Length: 238
Image 1 (cartoon, rainbow, N blue to C red):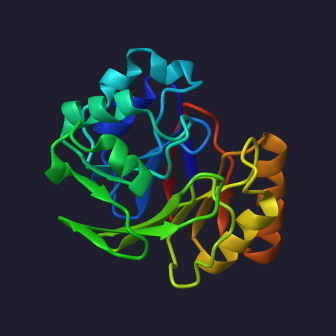
Image 2 (image 1 turned 45 degrees about the horizontal axis):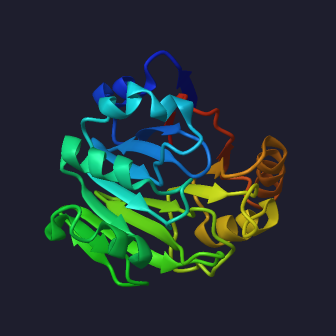
């Protein structure tokens, strides 16, 4: 079941109370996600690049955050100023691709930033985060996150890599444009490995997202596929 709200989506997400079988997220375009589930909030690939909504004072509304993760250094997936600001506002731990780790060193306290060394689990409180080496023109990490019985996958804009060992309840899967690495068909291969309860199409044109939805619904009829609108709060239950 899906509920959608516009109004003030960031403030609404932060104050939202959710049951254990519910989650909410905002899609900011490209691979940018702000996710809330089991009373925790995670940011994936948030960047102000080419996003008027985040360039406005809405960035200042992100005052509660548990983790921020960035897949690679391309500016639609990582913005140094925003990452530092989110840390200053929330004290959230930062987990990033090793290339970004080098960029962040000495710009935030060393104890709050972690390099996503491929397949090496990072444990922070109730969270376990695994960075998986993806495929892209730039070094990239895709992320598998678990906490309190929930598992989430975020694919950045990586090409397909084997994910058979990473079953997830919720998956954010790239579908194409402008990345040369991903496509609806490669997204389907990710979904077939992950077998998520909910798959959210990201990083692609609407036509590519719709094709991904058609492919997944045919091959994984028990998976609900969501094509999100940008800057919209979406609340769902499993």
